[in-house]
Length: 273
Image (cartoon, rainbow, N blue to C red; front, side, top):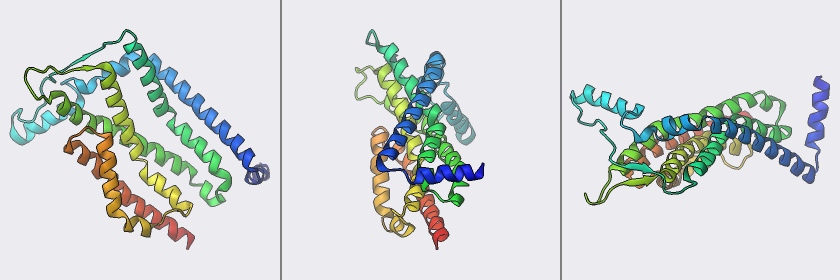
């Protein structure tokens, strides 16, 4: 069995450019099928996803708001920083609005569900270029990528999203103006902000593969640390709404992950010494 596997690996390693393209095509097709299956699962739980998950941060009894209120009682023995009723209305203005939002969020959920398998397909594509010792750690890489993504997803959903919704939902220039937001804007805001945080948390894994390929090293990462901080702040400003608190809250863990990436790059370099 081991000899058969070696023969397969040798065959994959000696593939031509067009054969690699054909292999890549099938990896992409299988990944898309996995996303589609995940989307079907998400579609079947549409009511729960909308009422409990996507619209959860628009309700005063959301988990994060309750924990903030618990903190308020602990620190001040009062409701000083509790989040009260959110003074805005979520509405649908298009005949097909709710249906298309159901379709949209189903595919976003499908992407989240299929992510571990997508990482596995990426590994299968790059596997022929890996050494035997490197393949032993493939499970760790896939598991780490999955853990980082879902950690970022949860961080975005339970920290960045409620802070942003509370700030923007209650922000007003005049008492004459009523805040009425479309379901489209709420759904995309919650989904994309959470997914964006999840993807940004993949930074250490990206640095690992760049270090393995020799494209970056720990010295370069240290040299451009300040530039990286500026880029992280800029990217956080794009992902988060225009308030400083959300930007800083997202930037801090990303910069810590960048520092972790420097440590990972250093370890990779030591393995090649």
